Amino acid sequence: MKRLVAGAALAAAGLAVARWVAARGRVPAAAKDPLESSRWLGVTVNRPPDEVAPAGHLPEPLAQVDAEVRMNRAPGDRGTEIYARPREHRGGADGVLARLRGEDPRPGIRTALRETKSLLETGDVLRSDEEIATTRPTLPGKVLDMALGRAAEGGRL
Image (cartoon, rainbow, N blue to C red; front, side):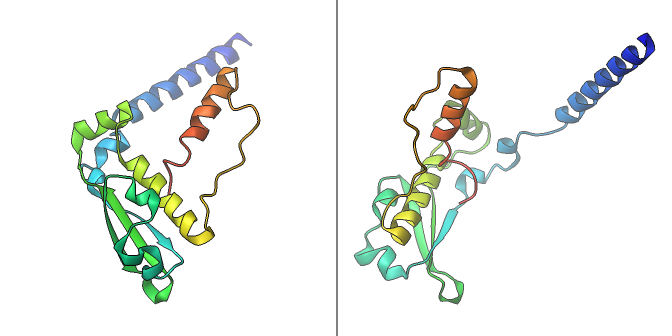
């Protein structure tokens, strides 16, 4: 019985060391691509270009962010492609530090693109149902609150 326990402990330690060694060779995703902060973020809206920006005026969510915006007709007459990127490009270590401090403009641009798409296609910015109790006193509840608060910033558009 003691040998079984010792063998399991040794196997677990070996697995932990293997994971640690493998992780040391990895580069954080934010540092992999120095041009990431200058890349365009985009969405396709099911509206013609003249409805997306009548008289050259951007929809309200996009007009409120400091970003370069361009629009193209989507292939096959399937609406309009809207692209945006931050005017100020932060790359390398400065970009990574800005993300860690919460000063990265890209999440705000992602949110603005999502809200623009929702506003143009449905007439309203759609949000998930909010619960009656907006804060949860437990540690897992606080983590969940933080994740829900930042949900519109990340992920694919």
